[in-house]
Length: 413
Image 1 (cartoon, rainbow, N blue to C red):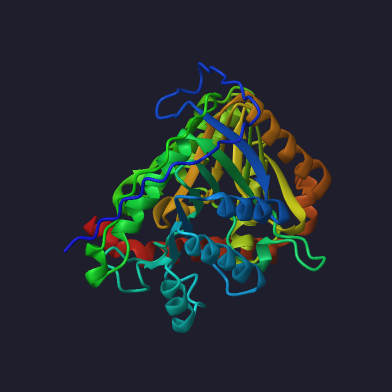
Image 2: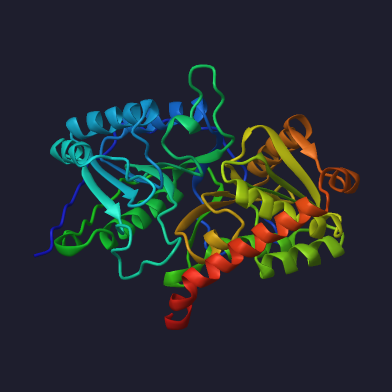
């Protein structure tokens, strides 16, 4: 028997935000965008978690949280306290975690969470889903409160992503939104929640009515999803659009930059028509093999006058890009094979000159102050024949592993 839950609480007040001007762009089409939104770029670390806590404390109706990693550490426990407090005051809380990346949660902890009134599910337990294949994980980092406000980015819940005890968080970004886009995210979260779980839980579906968002300000925002298994390639399409339509400049920040053939083809075409392209990559990486594979592409990029910057201050985990200071995309999507053909990803596209200028300034600051430019001379001096051979080996190995693990699904898709 199906379970239906209806919520219809109404907010008392709606805070005002600054006005953001919509920019009409002939180059970047407006299809799929919601209009009435307020947006703010949030840097990872303390700023993000302060914003998250405020979001959870203000919620009066419902909370959807979908995370790839939710660590059982100081940061994770502090966020869990806020979720428990929200459930205690009557907010309907849905917590969906990836069944592989967040398996550090003990059964006892999960039982406590469920006993508190939080609706908890794993996304497709490891090796137990009929849609499973290597790399297909819930890579979302989304929080939606009341269907009115949301946080979307690349930031997981854990100490690595927070500023604690004098240690700087990994570099990452999120976008805070209020308005119609949050309502769209609300329904996306609800659909994914209903499709997750297994056995009897598949029949325990939830249909909630979000609160109305009375936002008069205008800023174009659209929700973009990537799930190759279910034939969604919207974020890849956003990157291709950026490269095809940009007239002056494209800046890409990606923590694991391994673009596939189609992205590389469009990078090449954009560079040939005179678009300035800058790519910010990790100088220090938490996945050594991926970093060596990434460096294998440096020669290819340098030959096309694509500027490369390696972030030096800490681990780079951000996934954000902008074109001509107008179109921005930010979320969980890395420009690589895994995000394009395996993981379930979610980004927001923001078409707005004010927001785009802010993003561009932030990325420019990272390039100028915290990064090492990789010039042709730098590349020649630092990577000898053996290092280049190892980089190619890593690159070919990652591609081969990915192909072999997904071969069966490709043949039966």
